[in-house]
Length: 191
Image: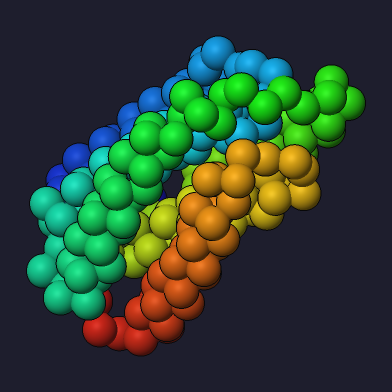
């Protein structure tokens, strides 16, 4: 390995924390108690997903001075924190409607495929000595995962209070994906 290819100490520290967050997210999403309600299952599995986005954003904020990226990360923290609270507020009400066993199995199977794809893309994201770009390459598949998980839940009968939250989540995550892709294509966040 040439000297140019070695990660700097800050990049190593950033990546160690990122991979710990990734592992915590996967464990949190897989170890929750599922119920007969797709709405409940979505909420309890999405909360660790959102918590990971908050932690990833806090992680990058320790290392980047790139103003546009700092704005994106701070917006993610704000939106995901609010979204977690909104989901906690409706969790009890959305746990009551039961879905059929067939619907739950189909929902959960597709959910697992989405999570596997998201986790693989995040885990295999190209890493270099630019922490800002590393974050963007990691967060884009994370946000795509939230979009796909929300679209998956909307295929089924879910709690009326959850439906607008999922639509908002899809729209806001798509907007942030576009912002992150545009930032990744520029040289604004060169370190």
